[in-house]
Amino acid sequence: MTASRLFWATALLLIAGGPLLAVTALALASLFDAAAWIALWQDLHWPHALALTLWTGLASTALAWWLSAWLLAQGFVRQSLGRLLRGLPVMLATPHAAFAIGLVFLLAPSGWVLRALSPWLTGFEFPPAWPTTQDPWGLGLIVALTAKEIPFLLWTAATQLQRDDVRQRWRSEHALAQTLGYSPQRAVWRVVWPQLSARLWWPLLAVLAYGLTVVDMALVIGPASPPTLAVLAWQWLQDADLAVNAQGAAAGGVLALALLAAALLWRASQGWYARSGHALSGLRGAAPRASHPSAPGVLPASYLLLASLYGTVLLALAVGSVAGVWPFPRVWPEAVTWQAWHRVWDSRDTVGTTLGLALASAALALAWCVAWLELAPRRWDTALRPVLYLPLVLPAVLWVVGLYSLALQWRLEGQWLGLLLAHTAMVLPYVLLALSPAYLGFDVRYAQLNASLGHGTWHFLWRIKWPLLRRALAASAAVGFAVSVAQYLPTLYIGAGRFNSVTTEAVNLAAGAQRSLTSAYAGLQFVLPVLAFALAAWLGAPRRFKVTRS
Image 1 (cartoon, helix red, strand yellow):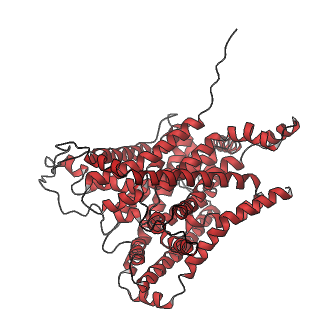
Image 2: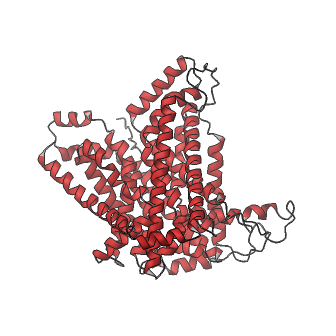
Image 3: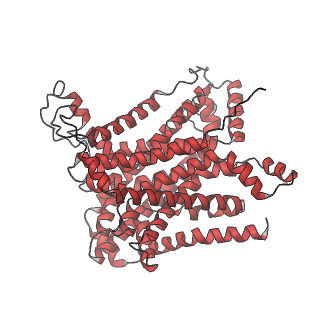
């Protein structure tokens, strides 16, 4: 490790780690207000809100974790992981808020599900007063969170399987376990899953943090009276009274403590699970079962159900965006109108702001992550990952308090540069999480061969390493683009009302009764990341060479 590489690695750490630590320090400093904690303790709503938060966050995380594990096991056994992962970009590109809005249009009392069943089965001529969305038990929010987090966990697991050495080793160990009498399914749970799950701790923590602290999805489909604690904190932070603001920050501190406790409890349960040797199919020492091979290449039914849900949600958004008069219980609207899309076109500045922020923040985050992974010593990278992942694991309402305080100190509130830096801070950990497995797993023998031929470092990077990693680089940039498009709270606070994005418009409209305009913005919120993932797939496609015969 040369002195110049250490110098540039230190500079990169100061560029990213300094602001992240400053935001964290300012966020934690807002918690040292005794009056705010007393006011929070005396409030009658927060205990119920906290219980709803724990219930929805933990339930959705557990469901997403085990359903993802089940799908990975099925795909591994059936040798259909490639097909299973092929549809993930569309699911990943669907923003959380857009998915929640589409799910509301499906499950609401006037939604498509009841329209399809009425009146011939239900007898309803009018929408019933059923709490199918924003239900007091948080079931709709659990469904939405689970369906959205499964693709993320599958995709992060797939990045681990992109390493040829890891994939080949696990395949050989899986085959060896079968020669000992274990069925293919049990061999996965005994051999592959314990190793893979240990590598997914940070993605799992990100899912848990999002489930416990989500605001935009909870506003759209979560319980309303009382709401989750994250929404309650967000409402207090918007109040003009500084004392109420401090109470909202204190609620964010409660969320941070709840997240810490849940993460430690989950980690302890996973450690007990690993030590005890339990697997889903039985205990250690149980007699191996006979193998029942599944048809190779066949996708699991649960994955097809998930893909169908996404397809139906997106279809609901598409139809809703052009729906005119649509009385209940008609399945299709009586008239089609493009008025909502005309209004979207009239607000081109909003689309331009969204695109500019997404492109710039994804490019900055990708450049920083490539430079960091290339220059930083491995022990630095391992030790500093918790700092770089702070935006993932801190509650969003608490993080935005620190972000806003730093923007005020740097005089960046309401400035495009401040909004860009806020988006980049949120995008960077996702890009780093997506890029690390492929980048760090790159075969070092290529560098040795390059050096033996007398070529320098830049020749190796431009002609060998980065071209071979272009699929991972393009996919990571697409993830960063999608994360930026989905940002709600940073845009709301740092933008200070001067900048609107597609996401802020969609979430704000979801509280009203403008179905077509809400669907149009939610649909656009989906289309932009899909285009980014499509471009990434095209850029990352393997090159094909034509052989000409003379």
